[in-house]
Length: 336
Image (tube, rainbow, N blue to C red):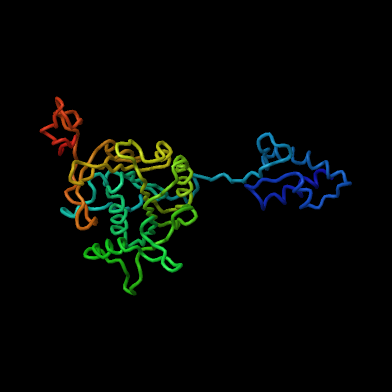
């Protein structure tokens, strides 16, 4: 009887893996007679299922169990094993030279990778996101943005500023196909991003906004996004406080980023300082390198992209002997 009951309970639990169950719930769902030996015997059944790793106890709660999600081993060295190629992701270009960002050729992008753009407000996060979309338009990327759509009469429409940028970029980018249909997909998503990721595609999210007391939840958000990418990649913009070393969420952002780029002010003219904060697979040393550029043409172009280094005269302080450094004019960096 006990073995039969064990098999019955195990079979029932197959369809609710990952959920919590109680003894009372199982007795009710399996219609166990309160006057039968099985009514009390189910406690022993659950003990056996714990040993078989089909369920586990939830904390110290009596009679509460979590059904373990069953997984199968993944065989690695199969006869038909194929090595997947690098992901062909094109980075934004300098409109002056037509060249991709200088460091991009040193980054090996893999399927399932995630790029984070941690940027101070108005430091070109949206520009870079839209240029990633433009450069990869022929593989039909996915766009999600806090400021890309507006709700009008109970339906979403493209936001005016977003449309204006698209129109400006239309001088260089074909946004629609031969049938007049969008070559990208715009999704009005502002939360639960993992649920809306389109597998095997480039997913661009500009930007993820979490309330102040939930910034440290960003790790779980990024983990969920990566889990849904399949053979695609994600580019995600995040807000960063001025002078902060990491985006909001700190180390939790770094935990799931395969490439980390930081965007900070450079000088007084609105230029941008880009720092390669991390790259899991680089073909030459680029982590820690810094670059500067200007933004032109109504926020749609990267101009004068070049590598910079800390000013040797003021050691990157911007001041020397309590006066603005004459060598870097207070910018802290000079051209390489």
